[in-house]
Length: 637
Image (cartoon, rainbow, N blue to C red; front, top):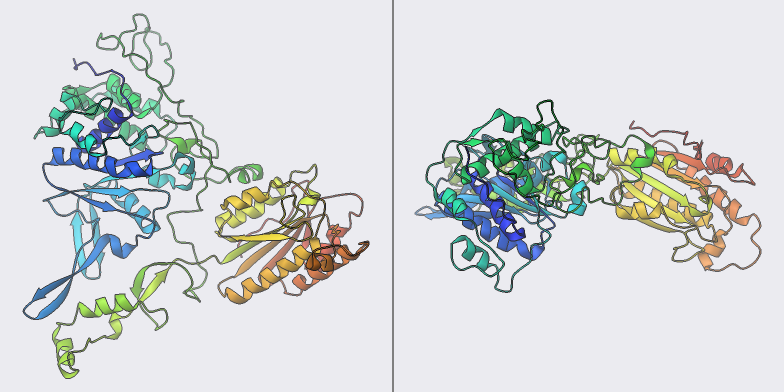
């Protein structure tokens, strides 16, 4: 029979200390993810985690912080300088993530997981939960067993921007919104861990936790089949199985802390309460007992002990998460066009306290977020993307000077180069194999240009008609150029507004789809502005291979182009605005259809239903029925 569990109510600080202690104690619990942690609390929580880990490992703890600018060359290797009798020598040392030194433990701190760089996210996926890791780079080779603990924080409202594969690597989740800095400073956390007098209301780890942390031998604890089945039953919709495994490991740590030699379903419930996972309602069985082994008649547990008091729980994890987020973490596109346009504002999921808010959060992440965007060309035609690392140079274009010098300096003491240095007054010898060029993140090869005439949207929901084009932009990681005509919020009602977004996930795109219509429709100015933006994009972005122009309008432009340029109406308009719009559309159509595809979404307004067709003929495109959502679906050529 196991020892009774400590069921006293725990506050946010005590719960956080217990969760961090479980990560320090339990194998396989290397990743801790804290939701809504205040930025000023990252350092105190890291100090507390380091104190717990040092208490367990009995060795120094080194820390590594990863951010948005962390590259591959900063993670795995570190060039060092060494002075000897022959001068200064360069050598390669293990990087901050290579944990092959037995004399110290390591904590990897990620203050904002959403804004972590792509190499950092890949490193987290590769190391967390792995049995072995290896690095072979620039002649350096290392192999080790990952033992580093990862402490990451992110806002729950932004959880939809993260890859589910990355989130699955963090078995311990906790909402830390109620954690605040105390008046005595962060050192009081460590005082509580060391057994010194704690601050009133802070609390400290119970003696059983400290005994488990300082124990030199890890007692054996067997997970029963009932406990394993109960852990799996809590996450019936989890296809990956990582959640159930993490909960079972956490339950076994709690059993060890309480001095038990077996881990039963009651410990699984205790671990679920610690994280905030709600158990499904008990279903009566034929023998009068619930599915988790609890007696329904007496209310006692499987070992005869009274059940622990009820704790506040989050909403249960849904079994069927639909298309917004799969329970196992696999990303899927929305089933219908209407849901695709409903993914621009973040959803907090199950609410505060839920350890898995991504199940119900509307995903805001890029398509395949752990991959570099695919390019059609064998090499980039321009060097305008953000730098993410260096690589061996094949040409003299976009050279990384510092990386080239470092690479050449590492081989200066080789016999061949030493002779060249002696004949060249000791200057640095650079050979063709030493040249390094920048590795850059590819810029968007596709572009979606939307011209939205808000005056044609009265009584019409245009989201289903625009969904296929927005989905094409999402899956192709296309940039978005949005031109707005006739908006009530326009800076000037006689002129069109525009902005350029990096992707369809920009919040401004979602806001533009829901603006209220105004009084005027400067369609001619909007098409003229679109013509200028398209020509500039094709002239300045040589990597642009495909663009879609989607015009949503009824064709009834009531503002002439001269009025938009002058900022005021000078006389009767009549048909001048419509003629100016057709003329501006003709200039866009003259660009040809090699890389530009034009579509006019017909609003089916009366009178003058022929105007959208005249506009499409001038653009050299096609007209689709907007109100029935039938039309041309974009595809990659």
